[in-house]
Structure formats: C-alpha cells, structure tokens
Image (cartoon, rainbow, N blue to C red; front, side):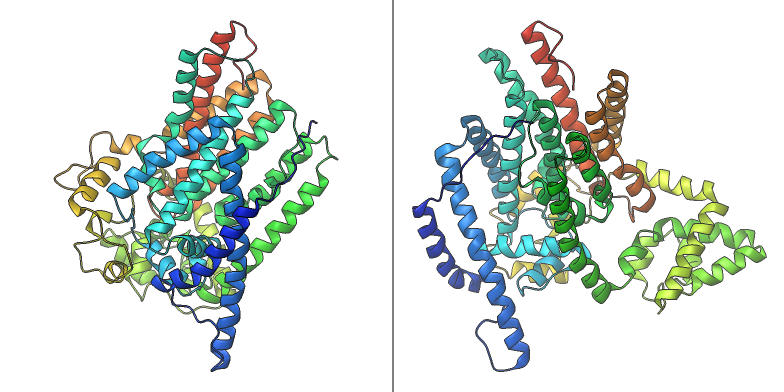
Length: 536
C-alpha cells in the first residue's frame, strides 16, 4: 500500500484570527443562546457554567481547525477542489437566500430549542445537537445551521470529484472534461438533494458522510493507497448518528481487514471501535433517560395496527394471549378504534395520549416478543403494510411554506429568533414548491412526476443492477461496498415509522452517485480508446 506523507503546517495568522473569533463569540452568542456562564449563585448554575466552559473550550479548538482549514484550502488545495466547492456552495447559497431561513418542518424546532440552551436532543441523536450548537456559535441565527451544512456538503462534493479525477490520471480534452464534470455533479443537482441540503435534519448530513466514507474506501482500493487517518472517526460518526447504520460496526472492520489482507489496519479498526463506543454510550444512556423505549416503539407502531386488527378478527386463544401482551404497552382498544377510523400507528402514537400505557422494561420486552409472534402468524398482513409503506415513501414532513403564516407554537417561537424572517415569503414559497415538485396554486397538490422523483425505488434498482454487474465481473470489494449501502434498505423497510422519503435518502443519494460515476467511467473508457477504464 502506498502512503502519501503530508506534514501539517500551522498558519500563525489563522491562529490569531481563531483566538479573536473565539473572544467575539461570547458577544455573538447573546444573539441566540440562553446558556449560563460564570454564575456561581447555585449548585445548578455552577454545573451549567462548567458545561458552558467545556462547550466553549471545544469551540476554541474547532475554530482553530476551521481557520487552519480555510487557510490551507486557499493556499494549497487543488484547483479543482476549490472550483467545485466554491461553485456548489454559491449555488446552495443562492437557494438558501431565496428560501431563507431554509426548510424547517417539525423535529428540528425541538433540536433548535434545546441547542440554544446547550441541551442535547437525544430523540434525533445528540450528535445532531452538537452540530447545531457549534453551527450556531459560528453563525448565531437559525439559518446558520443550514449555512454550515451546505459548507460541509460542498466540501464533501469537492472531495468526491477530486477523488474521481485522481483515480483517472490520464489527461482528457477540455470538451470531455466539461462532460465529466457535469456527470459527476448531476447527482448533487437533483431536486431532492437540493431540497434536503436546505433541511437541517441529520439525514441530510448523514447521507453525504456515508457516501464520502464509501467513496474513500473504494478509491483507496482502486489506487492501492492506505485509508486516510480520519476515516475510522468518520466511520464511527456514520455508525452512531443514525440507528439504522449500526451494521457498519461489522461492515467497516471487515472492509478494512479485506483491504489490509487481515493485518495492516488493526490500529485503524481499534480506533474505529473505540470512537464508536465513545459516541454510542452517551446516546443510549441519554435516550434511556429522556424517552425510555418510545423511540424503539415508533419503529413498530405502523404495522402494529393492521396486525392487531387481523389478530382481533381471528380471535383464537393464542391470539387473545398475544393481544394481552400487546395491551400492556399499547392500548388494543385504541388501536382497533384507530384502525376503524383509518388512522396509522404513528398518527395514534402522536395524537392519542391514551394509545400508550405506563409499562416496565419487562413488559416492553414481552410486548416485542408478542409483536414478533404476530408477524410470524400473519406474515402477509405485515409484508403488505411494509411494501405499501416502502412504495409510498415519497412524502415530506409537514408543509414548510406555512412557517410564516400559521399560528403553530413552534412557528411562533421560531420567528422570534434573529434573522429568521424570509427575504420574501412569496419567493420562498414559490421556490420550495418548485424544489418539492408541488403545484404553485396548492402545496398539497403534487405534480405528475413528484412520486417518481422523490422515490428511492429507482436508486435501489440502480444499486441492485450495479451489484449484479460487479458480481459477474468478480469485482468483490466494490460489490461489498454497494451491498453495505443496500443493507440499509431491508432495515428501514422493516422499521420505517412513516411513509417519508427521508428514511431512504442516503440510499437515494448513493444510488444516483453510482449511476453517474458509472457514466463518467464510460466516457473515460471511450476517451482512452481502450477497455481498461470502464469498470468499477
């Protein structure tokens, strides 16, 4: 394996700017944060002050890294990297200004409320809260979270493009080069991607981080180079940030063992496992303390309604026993009532306080066992509901165009934050309707192509076809990388709590990236006039 040695350079000017920026942040934080600092009037405030000092200390190191990175990119980064990063950021900045303050729907309001008090929001993973907190310290207004997000995404896209070009060392003509750039950028110009970039939920960033991770591994294999030092940490974040990515704890070490012939990357694997545990433990503890088993419960309530309905209709002794176990956690009566009214499980979960009962951990464990037995007794009912949910997973959560017109408590609170008003609400609404393929007259009315464009099904098919091709060509490591991305599909299929596009967004992004990268390879193959450049 080849390893490029690059020495780290400390830019003194950047260091000074970092320190000045850090001191100024204590003033700019006042615009949006409501934290306690240097208050020793009570034990509670002392603890909060210590927490604030810890957060600000980390922010100092983050600022040093950010400003060092800015200076490095300006002075030494590849020209292609800078052009792509700046060009894509400029595009997203224009879209952000047009849709200012971005696309806000539901859960992110709670994350924002917690972040301004330096509290973690475990329902959407505390890593999301960390991202919000430091984004708001950089830019103290709600859209600052999205601004940092599009900066990160622009840098990741620039990295992906330079990786693609560096793997094809032969020079190509200017006309062909323009076509190659276009092919590599198309997946990131699709409307669902542009829309998601403006949406400050963890799915938006996580999808790009996962794509970046898989791309780094693929190009390490293709160029026979050692993985970058940051790869284990990146993999740990990907593993922990979303529950359905937990399988990476198996896949990532296996990939490194494969690439290193079993021995070379043991240190990287140990670093990855250590980082994963460090990130995972706080989330599980916080989740247990703040929401108990509720998050896990949301993953079963959707198919639970038709299963309970089918069980009630059959009404055997075994069925009655299983329903009794279900009833200890979820009211069977309310579930049946909801089924008659045509309500979904997730709707009952959020709208009916009497849907859930008070239950112990032991009762919840028995509930899960009963749920699994219901699936085995009525597999057709379960699979029918799951398939319908998968095919219909084209929805977007809430109508964000109502953010400045409706008197929803979350909306009212949001409007009180600095720089939260749109430049033009009419323009914002029109652009969002365009991005989300809705009619200009009525946001709730979709265009004919909406459900096709906002569907992960084509991307899943792309990955399946690509996997078959790689299997035939015996390209084992690229095949394993694609299968790693595809593993998420059955996991989400079995546990998706509602029919939303965002649950499959990472598969969507990776699928179209693979499609257009394959097209890029085909243009390279034709340009070289040989058969050596056209395979994954």
